[in-house]
Image (cartoon, rainbow, N blue to C red; front, side, top):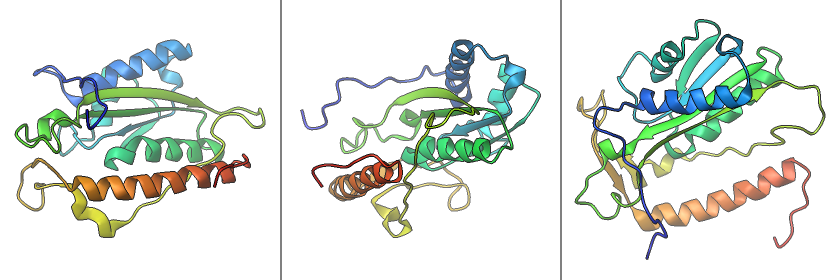
Length: 205
């Protein structure tokens, strides 16, 4: 009643983040009608990598059978996919690549404290993928981005573990009211900013 969430998906015990990321990528490639070797760059946005290294995307790249181009992970938690998308967009706009595969994938159920009702009902598992392609058409594709971060708010949503700090993955800790307050404020401003950058009229400001 409080969250509006009807259900959450949970990965199978034998599934890794690279597994669900690969499924999403395969679906995207199939729908795009591109050949795997035509992909110039792959980015995986994840905060639950298979291993500390190599990057999860390198495993995905191997599972897809792609031996061309380059790949790397992006770790920006909830904003990760947007950061990955904007990065791929910039590579295309600069003329360095033509086709980019961007994947967002997480198995957050592995770092949830199932006795903490403040977090366990919010975080689930899933993956999605999109392919971006260069075009000469004007006003097509991504029109604008509005990215923002504030490191001073690190403590309101975090895990209590890390490779360098205690060699553990930890579990998610969240100050719900603070996260909600800042999310509503920052996200609404970001949406308006993105619309203005794209020269789309904003009403009701």
